[in-house]
Image (tube, rainbow over all chains, first blue to last red; front, side, top):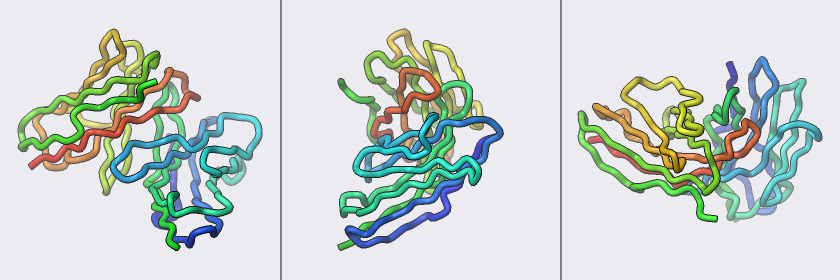
Amino acid sequence: AQSVTQLDSQVPVFEEAPVELRCNYSSSVSVYLFWYVQYPNQGLQLLLKYLSGSTLVKGINGFEAEFNKSQTSFHLRKPSVHISDTAEYFCAVSVWPGTALIFGKGTTLSVSS
Amino acid sequence: KAGVTQTPRYLIKTRGQQVTLSCSPISGHRSVSWYQQTPGQGLQFLFEYFSETQRNKGNFPGRFSGRQFSNSRSEMNVSTLELGDSALYLCASSVGQANSPLHFGNGTRLTVT
């Protein structure tokens, strides 16, 4: 069975600093990997996805993630964060069949000035 | 294109009652899935419907049920409500392939008293 572990529940950073949100997954089969962001009182929005091919995936709002099969990781990075990046971030792995996702517990990113 | 619409946004029910939540997917999307979000358990997959058929189901009791109509709109029903059912219920739609991203609504906040 698949599972997702987000290693940090909260990550506080200062504006314009780089950030990395860590995600490890467990699966016995090939998977699709996703990062979603949730702003207060809203649903989730897709940041980026890894399906196959290049292990470095670029997403919206300047975020990128690197798929590492040997370490079963899919860490999310941004070189310079803004106050507006404050939100909760979820890593997810697909479940076959269909489109169901297993989510990690989430990482709260707090950006301060 | 209009996004995923969930109604109502807020609901307050009493323990033992039942509730029906509604979800209108993005036009052209044939898959609708439901998730429960709570502070303790995070995001948990309830079920997915594709072309009016349940394609996948999470690990929830039979009190949680759903259906999908021919226009892809979906409803979720919870019977015999318990205090622990208080949560944000999120609906997501997609074209239905495993590698296709989910588009989430803003959720229905259910409070059981």
